[in-house]
Length: 396
Image (cartoon, rainbow, N blue to C red; front, top):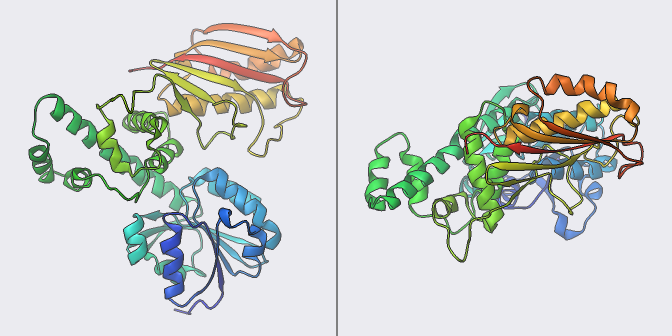
């Protein structure tokens, strides 16, 4: 194996980024680190780097940082994306980066301890020939296939591991409600296939190894319509995140489930902002769940850069808006059949026919209650449509 002698830029110095960058330095690699708080331009941090590694919080952060890095990326460099962002976001990065810049997706399995000890499992998608030696510094490298396959594998694994922790937390809550000794229950679980998960929850971690907020984000990214168990676990975690536990270790879910207290009352309204939906301006949430009801804010056709999709085109904007709505519904285990009320704002009532053609693709059964209103303008020029909804959530 040819030793990698180039320059590495490591973007992101959070819980995982710090020990991973340190391992590269100890291994003798030339590493420049970057974190947002230092105020250094990211383009300057990546200038001259042969390998650019990203370990950031979510898809929006990765896209934002790499967009800012574009002027500094040299032709022939390779970006190794090691955050958990999902395959769709990886392919969007491929479209963002210049053709002469390589891209590998390589998210990891493991937490802070294995990161410091070189015990991570690296799930690498794409051509890893030029970076395999560097990735092996972090632990064992498993090549998963083409670009995006590492990101898909990571979410598939987390779709099992995270709900399992929520399941054991609920099991402990059941035992507590029925007078079962907690230690005895954990001892019994230790002899089952859930033993390793139960052991993690025996003593919730004081140090954050894998945050509850990141676990919630991972399940939000992995949302799909048939994932009933993952959807229930995601709802539990979203409630815990809304209660202020997002920065705590995931094991904090054990104390949260079934134990409302004056210090941590149950949230009656839980705001929802999916990483797969363009970010809000901070003055509203894309949806709010209150009991069995989901309120979806007005959805309009603008992308993560705030630019209008299909300016002036009702058909293009309607398709985009209904796809956004579908993602929000799937996140909560719902479909368009669960929509109770839909309200539509048009800038020109003559566009009703074009809207109807798209709407009938998504709302195929008995239509919900509905209101359609013509308005003089919407909040961005060239937007022609905005849709808000009220949904009755199934099985809650």
